[in-house]
Amino acid sequence: MGKLYVVPTPVGNLEDMTFRAVRVLKEADLILAEDTRTSGVLLKHYEIKNAMQSHHKFNEHQTVENVVNRMKAGETVALISDAGTPGISDPGFLIVRECVRNGIEVQCLPGATAFVPALVSSGLPDERFCFEGFLPQKKGRMTRLNALKDEERTMVFYESPYRLLKTLTQFAELFGSERRVSVCREISKIHEESVRGTLAEVIGHFTATEPKGEIVIVVEGKRD
Image (cartoon, rainbow, N blue to C red; front, top):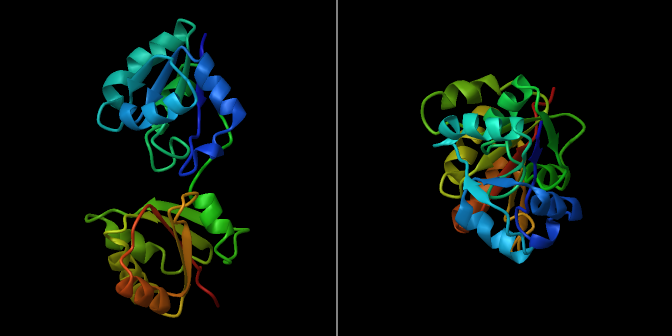
């Protein structure tokens, strides 16, 4: 029986790749990549020349059976996404679930995940938090937000720069404009930045300064 390795890749700086991650990718019989062009840059940088196959949310249901069968036959497969840890707002859950169902060993390597540095550097309580990932863009969005109105733990969201102001404005309407927030963008990249303050203050900042890059929003929980 083979094995599935879930391998985190850098969210920014290529130096965030671990020695173990490089070794596992070099030893794998097959690398599943969310986007082979994006991952190709990383693999070339580390001189990894193993076979690579596209595995993303649009084809994973069609490809998972074949990949599981290859592991049953003894092959080692490594799963990577474009950035960060597969399965965290990225493809990964489906193949992990099928491996578990089929008795195939799954190992997830420790490594880069965007929300952890954003949360730790936010200055907001991080001993208890809830990770919400990307909010639904349309259907179910307000239901999800209303369910969080009384959430007392720090909340973590991923967001596109194009929807950031809309999301922050909705937070202010539901949670109150004085609720504290930290918006961290371009984590581990040259232009990394954290903007902290009340929702009203941070909305003002990004109204005056167009947001760019990958964004993590960390919002204070409800206080008594």
